[in-house]
Length: 112
Length: 115
Image 1 (spheres, rainbow over the protein chains, first blue to last red):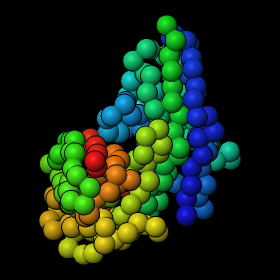
Image 2: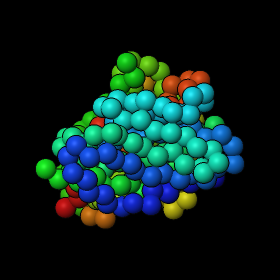
Image 3: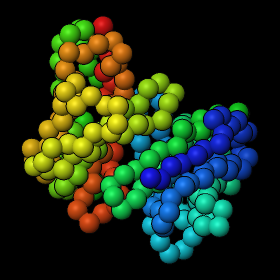
């Protein structure tokens, strides 16, 4: 079965600084990879996804992620963080068998 | 497109009672729906997968007699928490998958508090 690791539980960045959230996955075949954002008490919003093709994926709100098969990674990046980006971020890996597994999440705090 | 709704968004019930949560795909037919549970400051844990017209498949450790799932139509799945206890208090999120798609669309979640 697939699994996801988000090594960073909590990250603090200054507004305007760049951001990278790490995600490593384990799966025997080509995975389907997702990044979601969740504000407190809210549901999940899809930021971006990777199914195939170009390994650099552009998402909403200025986020992008790069699939690196050799490193089993799908890190999320943003060049300049805004205060409104403070939230919980989840990486998820899906497989053809309907399963979607989520990482533990990374809480992002943005300093003014 | 691809909107999933949940009702209610918040519910408070007394210990020992049952509560039903609805998950609807509003603009597409969902052959498969999923139910997740999320404890505070934790990730989503898959509880069960339901396919329209068939019995749900529960993850290991999830009591199927306590968490009753019904997927009676292509746009509606329900989760009934029976004989609720305070430890069932949690955030329940559903998702729906359209045919021939690997993507799941998530509902806004239901906050259940059992007193």
